[in-house]
Image (cartoon, rainbow over all chains, first blue to last red; front, top):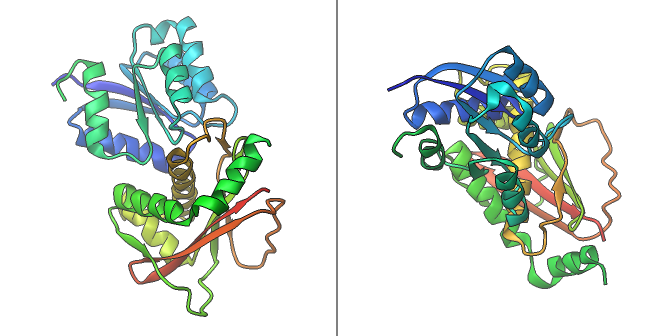
Amino acid sequence: MEKIRALIVDDSSVMRKIVERSLRQAGLELEKVVEAGNGAEALAALSQGPVDLILCDINMPVMDGLEFVRALSTVENAKGVPVVMITTEGSETHVVQALSAGARGYIRKPFTPEQVKEHVLPVVGKKS
Amino acid sequence: MSAETSLVMHAQEENWLPILELAVEEVFEIMLGHRVKPVPKEGQEPPTEFTAMVGLAGALCGILTICCDQETAREMATSMLGPEIADSEDQVSDALGEICNIIAGNFKNKLTGTHGCMLSVPTVIKGEEYTFYSLADGELLETVMLFEKSLLTVSLRLHS
């Protein structure tokens, strides 16, 4: 299986570790995991090199997840890169806002590894 | 009647405590792999060495807190992350704050009419020598839960 470079954006370092573990449990082979604590850090990380997948929280300080996803349209290293939101925000309004901004998937916390598998594998071209 | 007022009235009319308890039970089962259950307080004061809090603003205003002792907080972080990762006090605080955040989100997602409700970034206080004063002066929902052999308190103070 092709190895994936993942960018995980969440203000909680604990949650970043859990998301990484869930990706591995989903069967993804991770070549590289880049972590960022907010949208601004994530944009800075993308300027250093491309990734294949972005997992992103919504409620974060400095730059929230929706603002970050909207900003991705101007980032060369993010062109065509699938974004999956992983967030406590569960309202339809947030789902619509995220998908309209360009996110390809939406996972509500609390989440199981199976939900990560179900929502992430299709957007990186793997069977769930 | 404002949206905020009507929602707080629903807390009294609909009895939100079982919804809060269900939100806590789900988060512990899914994210920590542990079952917790509400227990009677029976006169004993549950420990408050670690307090995590998340504010709610907008359609539903208030503050959600989780209190427990240090050992329980460490056990919760270990359940979430594994013993090799949950080895620092910072990681334990981060884990407790995130659990509080997910419970707050899970609770509000179970209610109708809270789509305009936002959550704050979590705050964690270590130590018991503090006075908690909140402007949330409305309904208090509080439950004591049994996690393994330890007690933790989950409270939601709503703004009237």
